[in-house]
Length: 586
Image 1 (cartoon, helix red, strand yellow):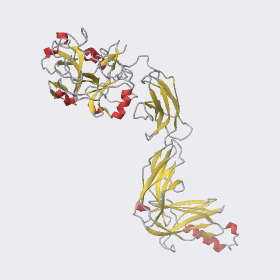
Image 2 (image 1 turned 45 degrees about the vertical axis):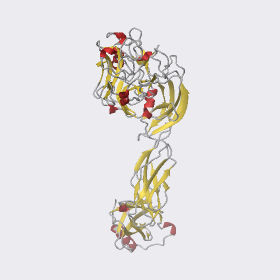
Image 3 (image 1 turned 60 degrees about the vertical axis):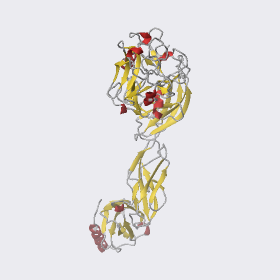
Image 4 (image 1 turned 90 degrees about the vertical axis):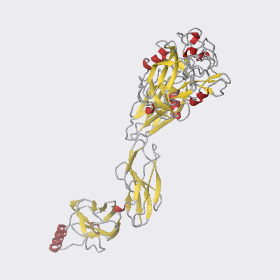
């Protein structure tokens, strides 16, 4: 603020008038104020005025608390040739107090004073607050505020104003939201995409005072287009998009594509990034399923992390050269240097009363404590089995799926302690059965071997370097196995290849798991185990059989625990473990 008394100006003018006879002044030489603006803010009053006269002039504003301005203080400017517009800020005003002011303008010929005006300073009342900006698009947004009752006077107008610079006023773009106290909202229109804006709510009182709320800022969404999808194969497609580089001044820190089996895919599902910035971009989408219809959209983020989506395109992948079997998850998993397999869609289940084998409907499904009721007459689904209990009389005494004997010697494959499930006829393996929702043919599924579990977890390679993670899927603890072509852009996963990680390091709801499964991910829930008819560690530890022996009375299995995982378990064959079957890729 510039504060100056004009005593010197007045003295000089008086001497000039005493020494010289004042000539008659033509009307066109008289100074005149053409613009008179007063802006009141929380802590100051800003006076702006304009003088219509080119020449040597000076001007000031007198401000006081008495109507005749007897106590006025003058705030003004030195004499400056050809200056027409003046701006003065006055602070240290008292809240809710009456003030009076007038302008004084002079030149070599005359001094002009306009009429005395009154205003009430409400600046410190903070009568309005600005709400956050919502519903942001490329060209529109919504903002509002709340007018409180801590003011003196009627609120005759309320609204919001916005600009590309700080501290917007009603002289800038603005929209009204009624009158009076309470909350309100206003639609901001005509915005430019990918551009930073500043917004303030305002309230105008009946005495002309305008109060402004605090300033908030936002960035409009970038304009992104989905151009085309080409070079489509069974598992890949080339997508092209564009972020408009001709409008806006903001940056684009992320762009890419998202896709799904259903309309309106988002980055909460399958997606991949393709650089930063504006302009055209493209990338090859990988890990798709053959003979499937996909919906795809480009996307771009602004610096606030808000996401804009382009148009939706639909395309279909080509039929597979190798067809995944019925009941299988689409992902391919290497279990040796020369063999890949598909995993079944869920854990193996058996109903004794109907003699039906099936795969669980969802990968996280398991029956847990219901397995305590295991028997030949049990009409529920069993999903914990003693080793080699395929239901075929292959030479063991305990070969039925409902067997509960606690004698390891009764579970010997083909009657010998040194036989694996896959030896001889293979009938001791659960996969020898016809699985009702897995093709319903005998001997097309099998149980992984000990060596295959080891290779799968510790040896094979994926593009992301991640073979497995621990996770909670649909509120169920377990282990996620990632297919050979898994790309880290499919879904953000933490603590890869760490058996000691907590299950909770990756928490995935069912709605998001769908995109992981679509990309071939397999989930093994931790189901506990059965000892006779007693259940242990249900929901906290998992046990899955392999088809391999370890001793004459023991067999190997996969262990998934709170503190680690292991394929080197030496287990009693009479324990009831879960079974997840695989199908060879020919």
